[in-house]
Each structure stands twice: as structure tokens, then as C-alpha cells.
Image (cartoon, rainbow over all chains, first blue to last red; front, side):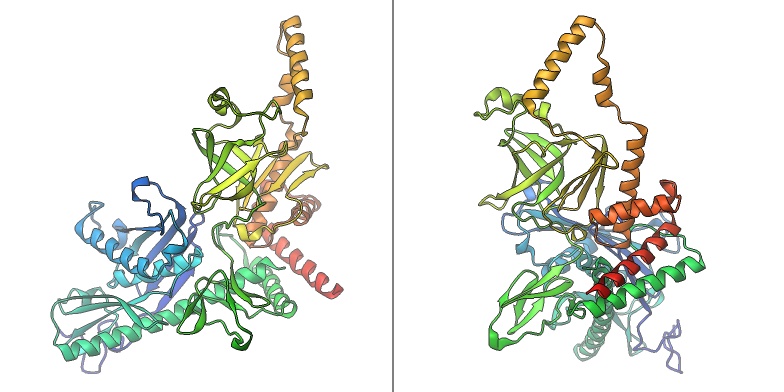
Length: 241
Length: 329
């Protein structure tokens, strides 16, 4: 199948190096400590943070740092075919783990000893790149909850189809079976915290694809930064003196 | 807007926007650090020659000071710190807080106070109901549920941190007590300012208002702080009376009943707090009372205070109030 037509356009009309439209909103869940909705094109994810709060299971308590927990789920209506899925299948357990590890790497857990932070992410609409969208939503929600972090983790995916590196794959491109590289970075520290790839890629192409994904992450980071700064300013001027 | 989805019509939306814009422009003219907002990992500009002390919400990264939370940069002499806006409560010694009992444990109660851990209120740091200073005995320990039960709302004071980091409370006065017959509201702690007075008796409404530093706000019927000995005697004499007359004393009924007027006042005050917190304005007694008067002057019912129109009116009023305050300066 042709994923990039001779004019250089992809199936949804984007250029190979173009990202989908981003949209983010903070404070969508009233009772949570922090919450956010993050959209990348048609992929839409909601994240809610509870905590730092008292550890629910005392045996998990760590005396010098916080426990981070994460639960990822997909809404039944998120995909094209409506299916009743078991709650803890392999895929969601794996993504929960990935998100937990990525977030734990950036939260300054040693500042909140003997407490627990719960991250809940749910996919509302799935159109490829849910992993990245979940991480971006979780970062926004953590920043909203006022949890101290080293840096904002951002994530973006890139692929390689029809001998062209493509940024931010959608569902059709994702299910083409080509390589899909998901990268998570700390943009200010310039460090990679997450790198996943299914399928194989020659080393030199891999490097260009990964560089492309990193560029995507940086673009996401700029957007998230803008949203957060705007939100902080709003809160401050409304509070008054 | 956080919390509620207001169904504003076109003119209301426009009015709200202009009011908020006015507020924004006011804050940028008055405060000198209006552009001091930072997000996570932003570099905080500092003058290295003076030397710096890094406070909360900052850390060092390759020789630069960076923020670790979203907030506003504050500078006090050498100290540079980031004041967080939306975050959980950070206790300071002497704070007055309102909390909910979640567990009765041996010699202590555990309280939920919106902190990263549960707070502990020891039986020994409580005034006993009989008001006598003495050692707490095993009998007292068994009777702990007669003082506070699970799910009771309690106000107390932050006593300090134990060496292991857990938070201890104390309630060594008559004003720290179990709270009943009222409403508890949970708002963001950054909207409550630490002040001299957190207990307010609003005489005109017959209502007690407690602004807990942890963002828990209590609006309840006014309870006269009584000397325990006197109460004891009163109860005793009442009991005698009751046993004499052989019927339930009317006085006791009176005590457990809240009049409709006071209930309405409680709801009005509580709604005022709700409006202020959803708009993100600082919650103070003066503002709450002002809102209640405003709602009465607009002939609004209690439930109409949570309607879109009242939000717009409040925002406009606040813009007006703040612009007047800046002009005075």
C-alpha cells in the first residue's frame, strides 16, 4: 500500500515531517489533585492525578520516597469496533508499567516520603500514538497537581514507511506493520527516558527516525510549556493580592 | 474553568471575559513580579554575585537554578523560592486546620487534612471533656469514641513534625472541637491566606465560619464556647428536672434543632465560598460576606447563587473592587 503519495502527502494529508494538531486542557476533573486532557489529532487521552496521599497498602510504603502507581485503560468506545475488553490485559499492563517508569524518573520522589501518587490515564479516542499521548497527558496533570519534577517528560512517535521517515503515526500507518519508534525525552536535560521500537530498522535509518521523534517531543514540550505558563498566570492574577 | 461548566449566554460570556481581562491588566500593573510565573524546568534568572539560597520548588542544574514546580518566583533577600499555586496543603506550625477523622487508633486519631500523609491527633494533646488536667488513663482511651468518632469533622492546630516526618496536631482549647450542624467545603489551599483570625463568628447570621489553612472550610451553626464545668452543672440540673417531670426536656430538643433561617444562612455562605473558589479568587471573610450581601441585594435565591449570572456579577464586582483598591494606593 502507498502511505506517501507521489506529491509527498500522507493518507491524512500531512507531510512526512508534520505532526498532528495538538490540544491540551488543564483541570478537567474537579475532585482530582491534578488533571488534563491531551489530544494529538484524533487521539484523545484524559489523565488524573491523586496524591501525594497516604499510602493505601502499608506494605508498599517506602520510607524515603513516594510510591508512584499508574493505571492505563482504554474506554470501550475508544476504538472503531466496540469491544468489551478484560480490564487487565497484557497490553494495558505493559503500558501502565511504561508510563509509571517514565513518570517516576522525572518526579522528585524523595521530597514526598511515605506517600503515594496515583496516575490514572484513560484513552477516550484511539488513533495511534496512545502511548505518547498518555505520557504527555500525565506530565500536564502532574504539573497541575503541583508535584515537583526534574523536567517535563514529553513523548512522540515516529515510523518508517515507503522508505520515508514519518512523524507521529496515526492508526492506519501504525497498523501497516512497519517500525514504530516511541521516544520519551526530558527536553531541558536533553535525556532520553523512554525508547521503544517494534520491528527492525537498519542503524543509520534508525538514527534519523529517532532524531525525528526527538524533534517531535521538543515541539510537544514547547506546546505543553505554553499551556502551563498560561494556566499559572491565570491562577495567579485571579487570586489577586 | 475548573469544576463547573457554566452555561453562559453570549452577553454573559462577553461580560465575564472583560471582567477577567480587567483583573489581568490590574494585576500586571500593581504587582512588580507579574512576569515571575514559571513552569517546571524553567531557569530562574538570578544575580549570582550576591549568592543565593535555594528554597522550595527549586533545584540546581548545571550551575543554574531551575524551578521544579509551576508557580510564582518569590525572593526574600538571598532566598529564592517558587510559591506553588495548585498543590496539596503544606503544613506550618500553628496553622489552624479542619480535618476529618478516618481512624480511631490506640491513644490517637488519624485525620485526613489534604496533606501528603494523614495527621495524628494524640489523646494526650487534647483537652478532656471534663476539663481537668490529668494523666490519660485506660478508661479515657476506651472512651475515645465518645469524643471523636470516624468521619467526624474536627478543627485543630498544627503542633509540629515528629522526627520521623509525621504530622502531629493539638487541640488544647475549647475552640478546637468537633464540628457539627453545618457544611464542610474543600477548596484549594492556596486560596486561603494565613491570618491572625481563622475562627469567625458572624453575629448577623448566627453562623460560625472556620477557614482552615488546609483549604477545608467549615460553615456551621454558631456554638457558644462554654466553660465545661458550667455545662456539666447545667446538664445535671436538667437531668434532675427531666427525672422530676418524667419527660424529655424541651431544652434538649432545642439544642439539637437548627432553625430554618440559620440553615439558609449556612447555605448562602457556603455557596459564596463555592463561587469564589471556582472563580479562583482569594477566599476571605470580608469577601464572603460581601458576596452574601450582593446576592441578597440582587434578590437571588440560594440556589441561584450557583447560576451563571451570579458568577458574572461577582467577577465584575471583584474587578471593580480591585481597581478601586489600586487607585487608593
